[in-house]
Structures are given as C-alpha cells and as structure tokens.
Length: 393
Ligand code: LMR
Image (cartoon, rainbow, N blue to C red):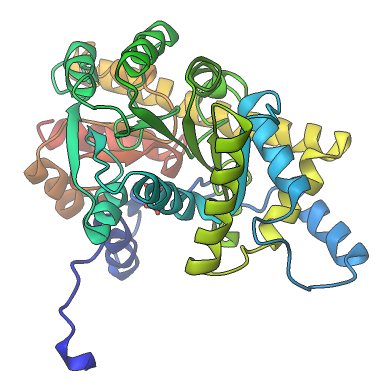
C-alpha cells in the first residue's frame, strides 16, 4: 500500500528551513519562515510564558482530558483579547491545534453548513491556505489583492472580486499583517468590505495570526472587531504562535459568531464534533499558558510589554531597511517597506532575483520575494540592502 503513495510537493516555506541549515557559508541570513528572532538571532521563550509554565508546573494536579472544545477560561480570555468583549449570546468557540488547525476546522464547518461552499482568497495568500483547500477538494477563487506597482493593496480590484462571492460562500481575509505581502487595508476600506459582505451574505473567515505584530494588540484587532459587530455571521481563526512565541505548542482558537442563540449552539456542537473527528481533545499546555497570562494582571502586563518590544524592534528594522535602500537606490521606491506591517514584506522581486540573493549573498527568502523582517538585525540590514541593489531589484 505505502509504495502506492505519490510524493507530495514540499511546502515552499518549510523547504527553506532545510536549505538554509545545509548552507555552510558564514554570515548567511534566514528571512524565510515566519518566526520572530531577537537581535541575537534567538527565538526566545517570553518571560511571562516561562513564569506561567512554572506556575502551571507548581499547581496543576491532573493531566486528565480537557473539554472537547478546550477549557472555557482559555477560550473566553482569548476571544476577549481578539474581540475586545465577549458577545456570549453570539459566540461559539473551540480550542484548536494552532492557527492552522482553526483554519482547517473553519473550512470544514463551512462545508458542513454548505456543501457547495466556495472560498474566496487573496492573491497572494499564505500558501498553506491554498494547500489545505486543494487537499480538502474545496473550490476556491482568488481575489485581487497585491498591487505589484505600488506594493500596496489593489483595493478596487479586491472589491470587484469579493463582490462575486454569494450567500453562504466564504471570503478569507487576513485580519492584520497580511501574509505574505505586509500590505493591509485601512479601517475605512474594511468598512467598505463589510458593506459588500452585508449585501451578498458571504461569510468572512478572518485569519488572525499576527495580532500585536503590526500597530499594537488592540489596533491589530480593530478590523476584526468591526467585522464582528457589523455582520451576522463571522468566523475567526486566531493563533497564539507568534504573539505568545509558543509556536510548537500549537495553540489557537476557532471562533464562530452567530446571528442568534440557536445558530450559536449548532455551531458550538458542530465545532466540538469536528474536534472529535480530527484529533479528539485539543492540546492544553499552550492554552493554559495563554489563559494563565491573560487572567493575571502582572503576567499580562509583562507579556504585553515584551510583545511591544518585539513589535517595535520590527518597526525599527523596517525603518532602517527603507532608509538604507533610499540611500543606495537614490529613490523612494522601497518606502513601502516602512508602510507594510507585521513580520513580512513582499519585495516584488522576480524568482531569478530571489535566487540571486541566495546564490550570491546567502540570503534566504520565499521565492515570491516575501522576506521575514524579524529575521534581520541592525547589522544584517545593510548587508541585505546592498544585496537587494546588487541583485537588480
Ligand atoms: C509562515 O508563513 O512562515 C508561518 O506562518 C509559518 C508557516 O507555518 O508557514
């Protein structure tokens, strides 16, 4: 049987990790996978996470199963962080296996409700969105998003394309810090998106994987909150991988906001059912870290302060890179790097130019020219800027 398997094409982002490891050149720079690295190149365990783990170790008396939906204190604390309030009469939620697990469950939920569902995704989007949908056999359509000229959002194109989604279709939106481009909608533009969805009855699925990495913890959730209070049905897949730095704990949540309590209860039951079918009980360690931090004033303040340091470090690197490139290119054509938000920016370089960066300068980024800003530090920014110019970008 196993010999009948077909080789799967490797994930382009994860492949880079291995390629980078195998490169023996001194001074190589990894701007591939979306993992935060401090100026020393380390992905640290956040202080509050360590403290919460110690507290859990000291006080936890059992490792028996959680609820099928995960623990309510975790779900309520995280949903409140995302939504700014807890709309209990509308809210169904389950703990998920990371943000990816929440996306997968959201798509399965949509298909359970509407077997003919179509999904509208931004062009480009996180490649794993497409991979999951292809694997599930879910039909999807790309909507225009990135303007290759301005490196901003092609908002007119986006509006025209998402207006094609009908009642019961899903429109997948990045709540903040768009991956892979770094280009985001303004709040006014989000209002226009809401109006389009209100008219069509298509349901937004918001992927919120980088809350706190763009303009701040609350600012990054503004768009999600606007959508949540404006539309009758909303799905949200949120991840704690990045903002709590607990990548390997696989900690996320799927939130469904319903129009009435009957639909809420149906969603809650279906989401718990999907957990049971896919992996049974969700992992708890990361969830417990998150709820311990969010429900303790001192831990929460320390975590929020460290997250702000992370965010400001990335903004500083953006400024430095844009300034270096302004000097070297004698133009403002790289200023978009300063305006983008989150971990990523898409440079808008060709695959050949990205390859040249790798071959000539040992700089690794995703083939579509997505670079992870957090993979840089003050010393490597000038190296990257020089290499970008040398590669003819
Ligand atoms: C990324 O886009 O690099 C991250 O979300 C990590 C991943 O799983 O792809």
